Image (cartoon, rainbow, N blue to C red; front, side):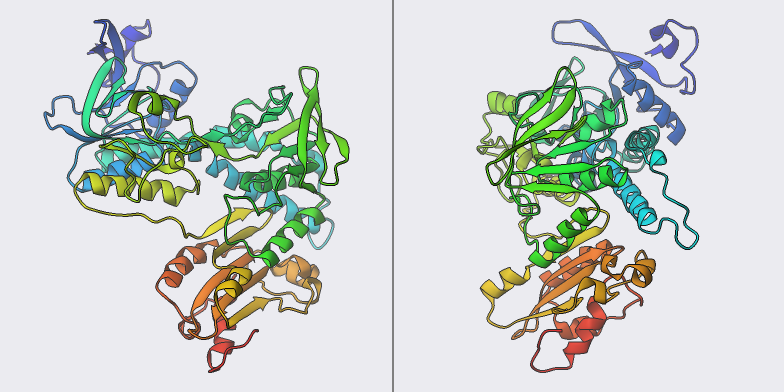
Length: 555
């Protein structure tokens, strides 16, 4: 162990980092010495973790950050390659089951892309989009001032996020070490040697099992000019945006196309979506009700967005920097869209080449690793989790995949079926759904009952419902903006088959509605619940209005 100062050419430890942290020496396979930063016997505060992560991201710290019990002779039950949601939760669960784990990640923090470049900034941007949209609709009324377009900025929000994103990183590093007792090596990539061995920072580690969880990244379509400056995806937007966009073209119709597009539009950047598929009809989304879809897309257009469905991007134009996109529309005509900002929203693919070459794991035609319901790959002792195994690219799936792998590794047969799940996306609304759509229900059941708001036959602008927190002003000024909702029942069994909502504040309810639908909740049991009125979703009280009828009919 050598003091920090020796590594940095100074007689004292780096600013704000405990002197107890030192640099230890590993010996690689060639016999050469490599440095690692040993954190095992040091408790870092949240602030110290944040500063350490920041310095590692800035390239000031190249050493791996290690929290490893090297003197513990207990063999590892699993090495988790990738410390995102699946690797972290899988590690915690394996520890809880009495196993020993090691998780390795190339980044200097645990948690993966979600808090760093993906779902956390998406939620920040979506909240900002909702606020800017709200201020626009109310501009110059009541106590609202005139909306100042000059103060709405995409880049400002990106910089705000970057300035604060190390807080959750620091917490996950701290919690994983101090509360969960996890072993990890961060700021270093793991090279998979075989089905039981990885090499990290010049050392080889072996385990009974490997769990692969290195995620996926944006699928970049083969479009000429796609490599020009001014073309971004969700990750490079955070890391590389160096100007304020003035006009945006989004290539693709995925979830993030709708979510980021709504943010760009709300921030004053006129946005056009170019999608081969109808929006919200892509393969990665299921159970999207047509009435919900219509409300959402009409709302995006109402806010000024241009949407080309059935269209194909032919070329990104520019001389070093983006100036436009040439598009073939659904009717076969071509148009050039002027823009200085192209955003790729075409979904994600994993990089599994090394796993195929070294381990021989089976993958599908898009490169996703094939697993069974226990997360086992085609190679004994090798598991794969999270985005590496395909859709849905959702946090619950990644976490529960890690948990599933851990339980099976520790001898507990456990299967995870993620074919059905609640889903959501953001525009300037929360858009949430679970279970069957009305059309799907009618294909499977003879007696389908629909309870919705506004009811069929009443226009959005004729009824200020549903409304609650987030939409009360709209209810009195612009009723067509309050949202919509629908629940679908089987009239014979009285079972709730599906629920669909556009509005504000109802997303939490769908986590529990998913469970209740699986358990077979009926309209009568829905009516027995106690609503917190005004509740964002009016499912309880509307169901109660029909629950007393022996023969159910629409409402």
